[in-house]
Image 1 (cartoon, rainbow, N blue to C red):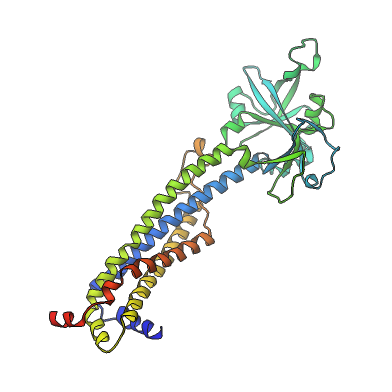
Image 2 (cartoon, helix red, strand yellow):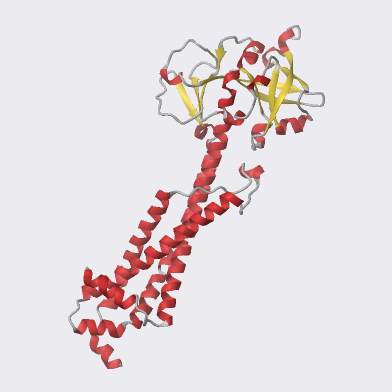
Length: 382
C-alpha cells in the first residue's frame, strides 16, 4: 500500500506533468464537484421546504391534536391520562360570521387565555386582549369582509338558527386582533377566541374537543383516544411534496452519476500521459494488481476532492440562499416567498461516501485496460 501511494505521488502529483495532464485533473474535479453540489442543493431544498412547511403548519394550531374516538366534545376534567398533562385543551366549532357587508362560514378555535402564547401563531400576541366577546380573525378574512380592529361582527350558532325564538342563536363579538399566518386558505376560514367565551356561547361549559400538542412527543395515546398530527391533517399536501420529491431526486442523481463517468476519460488521458512510466515500472517487476490499485486510488482521490469541494460549494450557496433569498417562489401557492434550504451534514457525508464508492466501481470495472498492457508494444511504438 505504501508503494502504491508513493507511486501516485510521484506519477500524478508531479511538477513535470504536462498542461493537458493538469487540465484533465482540474476539469474532472470541477465536473465532479458541480454534480455533487447540484445534488446536495436539491436535497437541501426538499428538506428545507418540507421542514419550513411543517413548522408553519405547527405554528397554526400545534403539531398534533388528541381527540376522543366516539365523542365530538368531552368533559374537560373527566379524564386523567398521562399523555394529556402538558397539552393545551381546545374547542373547535363551525359557525357563520356576518359583517355589515357580507357573511362567511368559519371555524372557531378556542384555547385557555393563558395558553394562547404557546401557539406559534400568537407568540408575540398579548393574551390580555382576549376578553369577553372578543375574537381574533385572519388577514384574508378581514380583507374579504372589509373588517378592521375594533369592528363588531355577528356570529350565528348554526345549531340554533332554526328556532327564531331562541335569543342565543347569535351574538356580537369585537375584533381584538388580526393575524397573518401566510397561508391564505387558513386565514380566511379560522378565527380564535378564548375557551371560556366559546364554551359559554355554545352552552358547553367544561366541555372541550380535545387537547393540542405543541411539539412532537413519544407519549402513547391510549384507547379511546387517538392522535392526529399535521402529517395526517394535511396529508394531501405532504403527499404532493413526496410526489414531487422523488422525480427531482432521480433526475439530479442521474446528473451527478453522469459526471462520475468523466473519470473514465480522465483515467484514459492519465494513462496515455504516463504510459512510458508504467512500462518501465512493469519491466522492473511491478505487478498488474499494483498498477490497478494506482488507477483505482487515483480515481478515488479525484472523487474525494471533487465531492469535498462540491459539498463546500453547496453549503455556501445554501447559506446565501437562506440569508439573501436569491430564489423566490410564489407565496400564495407554496406558503413561503422564497425557497428555504436546510444543510444536512449526514446527507452530505452520505453523498461523499457514495461518490467514493461509485468512483471505485467505475475505475475497477475499467482498470483492466490500463493495467494489463504489454510493455513490448509500448516500447516498439517509441
